[in-house]
Image 1 (cartoon, rainbow, N blue to C red):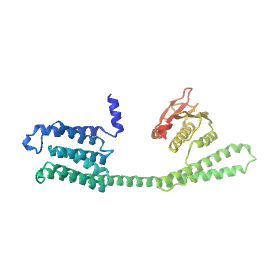
Image 2: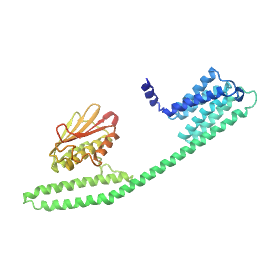
Image 3: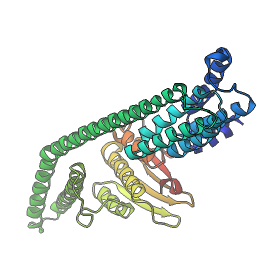
Length: 381
C-alpha cells in the first residue's frame, strides 16, 4: 500500500517536503487555536465546518510546485468562504503566504502581482461581509505578509537566475578552454600523422614491383584514412564545444551504419572481426545510435590495444522492446589485458546510462573479453 501511495504522489510531482509542509500548515494553526485563549483570537471559534475549510484550503500546497497559480486560486476560493463565515482570520495566513511565495518564485512578475491582487481582494471583500463596520486592523495588517512573500519569492527567483547564468558562463568558458587545447595539441598531431602516413603510403605505392612492401603500404593507407576520420570528428566536436552550428552534411554524426567501417578498420589492423545483425532493424533515436557506435568503437579499440586477440565478433540484436550490442574476442580476457584500467569502460558505462541502458563487461563464455550493452528502445526514444 505504501508503495502505491508513493507512486501516485510522485506522478503529481509531490515530494516528501511538500507532505511535511502541508501537515505542518494543518497541525500548527490548529494547535495554536486550541492552546491560545479564545479572547486572544478574533472571529468565530473553529468548529467542524471551519476545520473542514482549513483542510480544503491547505491541500493545494501539495501540488504547488507543478500548479502554483491553480493552487493559489483554489486556496483563495476556499478562504473566501472561510472569512465570510468570520472564522479566526490568522489561521489562514500561513497557507496563503506559502502559496504566494511559490507563485512569485516560479512565475513572472506580472503573474505574481495579479495573484497577490486577487488574494488581497478576496480576503478584504469576504472578511467585510460579517462586519457591521469597517474592517479592523486584525484583518488588514496580516495582508502585509502577502507583499513580503511576493517580494521574497521574486528575490529568490532572481538569485537563482543569476546563479544559473553564472554557471552557464563558467561551463561555456571551460568548453572554450577544452576546445582550444584539443585544437592546439590533438588536432596538430593528428594532422602530422595523417600527412606523414599519406606521403609514406604514396612513396611505397610507386614501388609496386616489390610485393613485400604491399602490406606496409596498406597499413599506412589505413592509418591515413583513420586519422582523416578522427580529424573530421574532432572538428565536429570542436564546433559543438564552441557552440557553432554544425553542418551535418559536412560532419555526419556516427550511427549504426558505420559499424561496417569500424569492422573493416579493425580487420585491417590485424584482428579478424565479424559483424552479425539479428532481428529486424528499425530506426532508432540519434542518441541511441551514437551511443551504440561509440561503445562498439571503444570495445574494438580495446581489442586491438589490450586483448592480443586474433578474432572478434560484433553482434547487433534487435528485439521488440530493446536493442543489444555485444563485442567479444578470443584474447586474454580480464585477467591482465588492461581493459579494466583507464577511462574506457567508465566512459562506455556512462554512455549506456545516459540513454537508459545497461553495460556488462567481463570474461567471455569461451575466453577472451566481453562487452555487452542493452538499451530499451521505447525508453531511449
